[in-house]
Image (cartoon, rainbow, N blue to C red; front, top):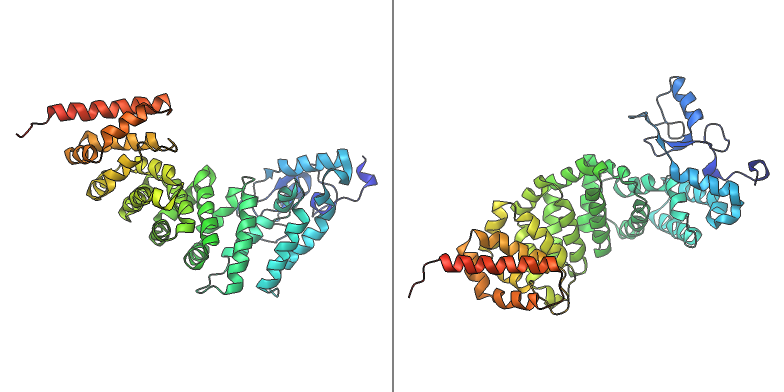
Length: 396
């Protein structure tokens, strides 16, 4: 279909030329332009974003492949290919409602609900919202102003806005999260975490996972790991909040991608919290034990983590308990590897493991349907315990 026969959707129109974008590129402000138009703008000596008028800290342009793909689809199939593109102008209007300083939180919640209704049946809805700049806007609304105390309306809005942020982050645009490097915005993040509902805490934990998973936000990941108040909050979340503890463990595990973060977490007492969560896992029917176990295994590279494990009265028992479980074997290998690490140099650990029934657990594991790699590790631990036992003097 020829573009002259169709009304160009707002999303596909260059804000400078007001014509169909041929080669979409995105600036650091999140705004997209046709490459030729923005190059002329910058060549004329302009140092700002034409739409937002923000000063460009970084003038580089990133090709917007998602928008190019959508434009190609539109040219081939017209407005029939996805209903949401017929509603772009409406979405742009709703975005202005969110941007308005005069709009109440209740009105902004209603606006998010309208956006949900417009995009829920669309395969390209999230991409469309991303191109319209909803992600940086929502992040600014959530973390732009530091509030010492959250109102009930703010909490309700935060729950909805965070759900949208996570949906849009699923497209991989993690660089927008770098806004949290600013102290005031990180402070707002902390206030939401401290005062938010279980749903808000779970969403923020997922954002921490996203930050930790991308090389583009590795500096921000390190900054989060330096925030002792946040680390204490995550540990407390695992320890006290049952309905969000799984999310807390996953966030802690994600932060452990950096050694400096691992050191800080161990200093804040994360080992005791993870061990307790494992020891009580069956009682609470949690499914986060595998993540906790893999995190413990990683932390045991640190000497103070080993000391924390040995000094915990139920530490070795917790690991032994997870060597073999009738219902599943996920996490067994991490439990066995952790026991190998701690038992190699500690007589106390070996004695506690044997006293806790590790030999029976290992034999059951070897007879189970677990992986060959897990069985190999189980045999290694058995040989280690046997050789160390044979070497030790026997007191009659």
